[in-house]
Image (cartoon, rainbow, N blue to C red):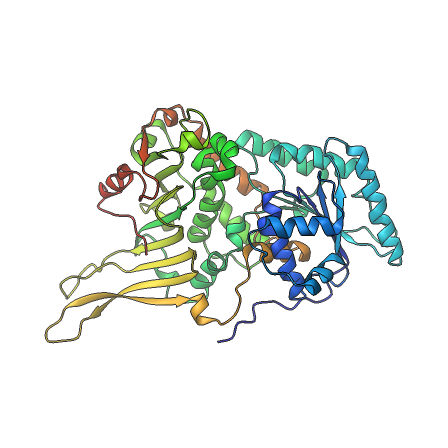
Length: 487
């Protein structure tokens, strides 16, 4: 089957997208490649300007050359593609400490609108910076006039905010208060790029569009759920940030809990952003908080050997964790959720596995439990393990794999997560973005671990780079008569 993944874009209004932090790694590695790809496939609004704000002294062409050289994704950009993209691009040199300078940018954008017959552009702002700069940028937007309405009508203004959204519940609430002072909730887009991945979006489709699964999606038929996010790389250039956050705050609060919410949520009444977010919120609020006693028995911490050299100093920060939690809703009563992530491991793999119960009464020897696996990366696919008869005399069972692989099933390119999310941002679709109460509910759960005095007292299990992680994690899950499931 040939894959035409691009949705039809019709009547997108004139749009100006401003990226703060345009010379950073996020812009070079993800945002600019996504926008270049969207331009190549004619997915950007017909009347579109991209304002890239950074502190380096570039002109427009120099900035694009810098991004092309810096990015590991854009390797072959023809002169025609470059010329096409430059027609959208404005580079603006600005320091967030100098709010007054951005009045110049506001005048430039107003002049651009006037040159287009006083068209009123929607203004979208992407905060691709450190969270410590969010307050300064918000002040710049307000004081410079960048948020002002225009003569034609009140323009639509939206802000997209990168993770981490806070470092604990207190700071997340402060950020929410800051943004909600200047913007309505429907103007704020809190991004988690994992939610934009095809297989993560497919979770709801698999559940709610197939009568095979949803009737079995409960504690009567499901034994346990595993979510694994494994990375081969160490902390790299993120050492300073990572040593303050650790694996728990870096991955649990956002990526892992968002995937858990999509797995555990009830079917929404409809597919509006409000209904989907309401159901996810119910799950996040139902996560069983950790006490000191539960931490000791339900959490394993690890750190890869050599981490202290990467961060250039002694550190007790975890680069690996494995934990067991429960969702206190009737559907999931008694079903454990095993969550883990780690750096410097032997493979890069993100997957969710749903482990069904073994048949209560099996007529054959060797019945194994069915496992439904959503592989999010590196190769997006869905696998279902089922029991089959081996050919030959007698009856012997073999567990085989039913596989749906995106690349094998669809010929063509699969859109990247940022491409999907940027397009939704331009269209004003919040279904794949996180609401303020979701953020706070997730941090409330994470704080029950990270802010617990027992957390720092737990052993820090050292593991070798390129291994499966600390042996203690395998021993720990084995006590529940289970083992980590990887394909």
